[in-house]
Length: 177
Image (cartoon, rainbow, N blue to C red):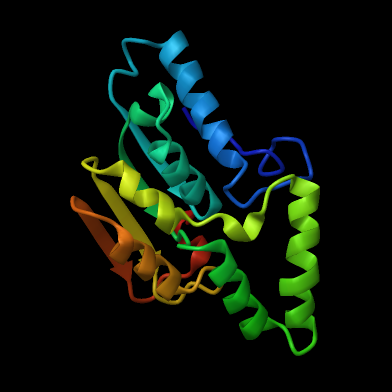
């Protein structure tokens, strides 16, 4: 099953939770595939890129039957902590005081709009609940959106079995091409 998250691809909506809200979409998709295709869904393997990978990790960490049904996870270009990612982006791409405004005004306003504290969302805190299921991390060292160190930190937070594939020349959207 492949699907677009809310406000992405061909799905409607204007509101994104950068993975925090989309966790529920992943769980709903697992529930749907298990109910409508029980034979084909005896083993569910999740693959997610960027925000989708963060949502997938959070969903697989969920204690619900749907979360626990995800037998293995593979991600591409995922971040470890939204708050740290926002800080990285604000320092890298915005001059003062715009970076400060992004961190202290923009993200809190987006959190109110989304109905969840976006900066509290951290896949690194969720990933320990995947054990003993395996997880594969793929990340480009030249990712211009999710800094490589965010993915590398997430890998370090993860218990075995864990695997990584670091692409020396990989950028954020290379997974698509």
